[in-house]
Each structure stands twice: as structure tokens, then as C-alpha cells.
Amino acid sequence: MSSPVEYIPTVEAVVPIEDCGRGHACSFCPEEDSCTLDKANHSKVHMERRLSKMNWIIPVMANKGGVGKSTVSANLAVALAQLGYAVGLADADIHGPNAARLFGMQDEKVKVTGRGINAPEYDIERRGENTKQGASTSRGTLRVGSLAFFLEEFDTPVVWRDAYKHDYIHHMLGSFDWGVLDFLIVDMPPGTGNELITLGDVLKGCNTSALLVTSADAIALQDTLKAARYCKETALPVLGVVENYAGTICPHCGGEFDMFPRAPEAEKFAQQGIATLARLPFTPAIGAGAAAGAPVAGDKNSPMHDVFAALAKTCRDELIVQQRKMMS
View 1 (cartoon, rainbow, N blue to C red):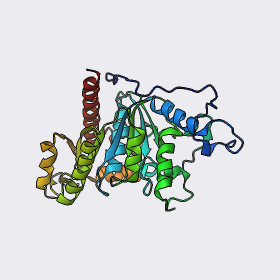
View 2 (cartoon, one colour):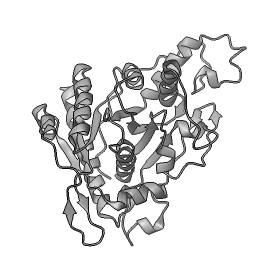
View 3 (cartoon, rainbow, N blue to C red):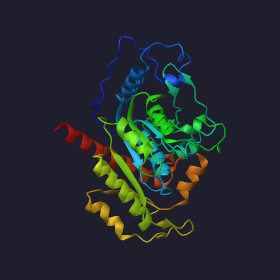
């Protein structure tokens, strides 16, 4: 296993004398109506407890829909787990919670226990055909939390005002039983609105660094640059940018060509000190993995496995650099 990320406790939870000890918000508790404890304090303390067990939190952002945030989030999570880390993927895309489908968990149902809402575990080695004969693997873990687990039907629309979104972000981080994590990947919705503002408020004082995703066309780049500016203005560190749909690989001859001409705006990230960490081709392998509920990063027979493994190692190494700067 690779060298573990150095752990820095970021939040010290102070447990009050009178605390029920349940790992979920009061709204999930069958005794809420009769409970006489300090509910506001309970919500604060159980959030602190949960966050104190997470080493690094990586929001995956774009400010633009359709550029592949969910796909990058899912494959990065699998790649980090395959390096032997304990990983969680939190699906913050309230109106399009796709994590369950990407991991083949669309039929999963969650339960509320005293520890919180169970976050189903994705078995990163569950598909034997995706592991090379005799290949050695480091056994990490990957847990998934998504609003999709609460929907009656896959096509049930989520029609919420901001107050409900605010509560969900708190439940996503605090009420799901994530356990101890090396990395929590947060798949963010498009935009720099309520979900992102709420997340930023909750994560103040935590080890947090954003990963930006864009495609190579001018419109997507322009919108993702807005996300980069948001990070700068809110002092949110940035790991770098992933350029998706960067060239197309022909499934017949293996030749590569550009689907989108690379716009000049792509160079503006470097001008802001934001490195391009990976350029992902538009290839049927990624789409096939998503459709099968098995992210292609887990398929050791696919060339994309190595691409996402390299991205995971680059993110890990950059986080170690950021962590050492914080300690110096």
C-alpha cells in the first residue's frame, strides 16, 4: 500500500454531559417529539464527530452541467480505494443524484441505526473479469451516500427550495455513517449556489481542496473558470483541473482526434496557478462502465484504469504537499 496520507485532526468534538450519542440528526429519531435534550447542540456535536474522522474532503466542481463531474468523482473514488485508502463518495447533486446508478446501487435501500444512515459499500473487486489474472490489489473501501437511496422511483423529481437543500447537505455529511475516511469525494451540482455555499460553511476548518472538471470547449471552460474564481475568493484550495472529453479515441482503429477544438481559455487555468492534472479522452469504455454500474477505473484490463490511477496518485501527492505547507 502507498504511504498513507498524514492525518491531521481538524475538528475536536466536545461531547456534552447530556448527549444521546446517536449518529444522525434529530429529524431521523423516533424519539424526537419526546426528547428533552439540546437538539441544536446535538446537531452541532454529531457533525463535528463525523468530520473529525475525515482526513481530506475533495469537492468536485465545474459550475457547468454535462462536463463529467459525476463520472470523474466515481472513477477517482474507485482509483483511490484501489490504492488501499478508505474512501467515501457523497452525492451532493440533489436534482440529479446519479452516484447510485454509476455504482450499480440503484436498488439499494438505506436504514437508520444508532450509528446513523448506513452508507452502502461498493465492492471494488466484485467483478472478477475486471481483475487481471494474478494481479495484486490493495484492499481499500468505498462507501456511497446519495439522495437516490431515499427516492421511491428512479425518475422521482426532487422539487426543493433552498431550506431543504441546506438540511440535506448537513444530513449528507453528518447523518450518513461514513466511518473513518482518508478521503471524502463530494460530487457537487453545477453552479456556485446554495449547495456549495452550505458545504463551504460546514467545512470551515476542515482539510478541504477542490478538484475542477471541464471539457475543452470555450463555453465549458468559461463556466469552470467561474468556479476557479469562486475558490479564489473564498480561499478554497484547488488541487487542479481535469479536462474531460479531451480527444476522441476511435473504437475501430484506435486513432485519436479532437471532438472539441481546445479553446484558448484552457490556458487561463495555468495563468492562475491551477495545474491540469489529467486530460481524459472521450472513449466508449468510460460510458460502458457507467452504464454497467462499474466505473472503468476498476477495470484493470482497460487503459483508462491506468489514467485514473495516475490521477488518484497525483491528487494524493498534491494533498500531501498542501498538508505539509499547513504544518510548516
